[in-house]
Length: 239
Image (cartoon, rainbow, N blue to C red):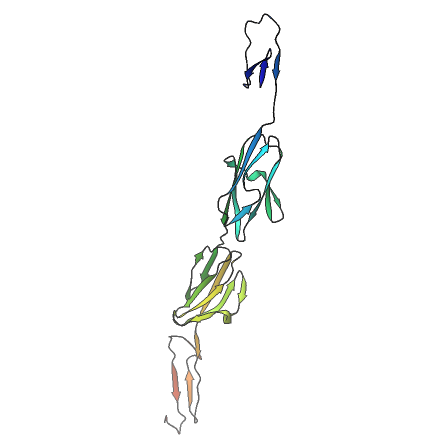
């Protein structure tokens, strides 16, 4: 409040005395004002924070909120008075801390989280297909790849993030007529590579007698052809 010559004139911050012909006394009294702080998490499914809600504090007070993303979630953005406040954050162990040393105005804090997604890709050489070739699963979810060799091809090797995996770990799906490989509880990007090879058969020859069978080749590609000649001995014939 403001008093001039013992008379209350209000609580404005500016006054004018005009046509001064005498001394005057001006008396002003002050009181501590309050500020409001509001902390809001937009989607509590993906994280939380301390000191949520609205708080009435004395001007100049310190205030802090600790921000905790949930499992498989991350902090997307923090707004302080509708302006990016990411630069104000401190990382402490597994969470973030937002500190205000001295609040002199009403302040709003809006915290946004988002679920974590990873990128998984798959590719194969000629001889078959693998699907999906590109997927972005949520953290903690499961992914199943389908591996389908072409006719006359078989799976040679399978690599996950440059690590060779056992062919025996693949599962053959009788209904879909494909092999499947599953990853559970995804926690990182993944890359699957499948190598196919052509199926090669062997032709075995058995001679009963003195004649011979001459093969053009001992190995034969699936769906390929092979030639052979049967030669009886001088005193035999093909029976």
